[in-house]
Image: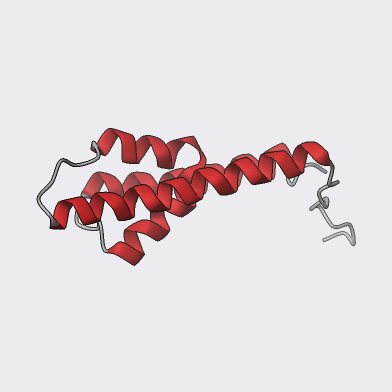
Length: 105
């Protein structure tokens, strides 16, 4: 094993700050969507469609969606949510690592 560190630190710039802010907002939105849908479920009211909840997770809100599932105990018995939301999170983590050259030599 060579002494070289294969992980390169991120060079922070204005665009990274904007992207980070967008990702944070998407995750906050996903978290509150899951909480809102749980509240609607308890009240037997009109619900947020599952495709909207999964889309929020897919389009960058996977961490917020997973946290919402755990905090609100919502969709935790639905197989597609138990599989897809963590899978989206893994995908998002890998995309960030690849985008910032974590796997380059």
